[in-house]
Length: 79
Image (cartoon, rainbow, N blue to C red; front, top):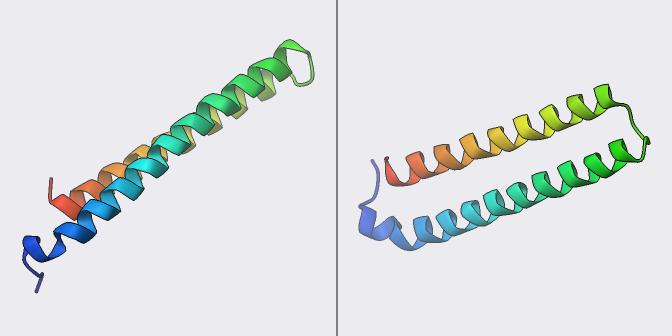
């Protein structure tokens, strides 16, 4: 049996803030990785084909993090 929400509130608030912080960090890393990749591609240090694969990989990983964030909110708050 699950404890009342009032008992869980301090923990869920802390959990939610940590999950949100991690999500924001992953979003920032995605932007940084894509920018670095663009610079590598422009300087001909990697091929266009490799660049496309890398960007798709990074975007899919970020999407997984979005799903994990949504799951954490749903299991914590029952949305």
